[in-house]
Picture 1 (tube, rainbow, N blue to C red):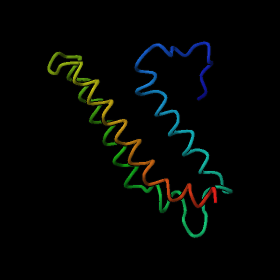
Picture 2: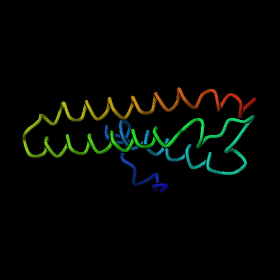
Picture 3: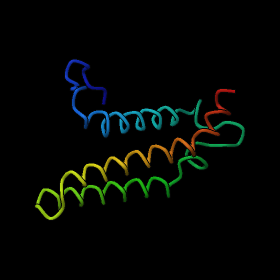
Picture 4: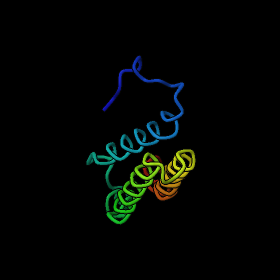
Length: 110
């Protein structure tokens, strides 16, 4: 899952808007699957922070974004609006998950 740094095109906006937030989210979630980091003071990552409902909303958002791009590539919707909408969805998900994870991370660090 870790790309070769020489192969990453950092001049491409898609890298910054989509790839880096998704890679960061996957990395953080994978780290908190480790038994050492999973629970702290009665607060557990999978049960209290990132729940199944959160994951289902993320999956539904991904399906909606994919469908919007399907419509855009067929000429039904404007591609520029599709990109902006997808970027908004990705960053809303990131902001929501960070807001939910902050209390857990504060307890983890302290």
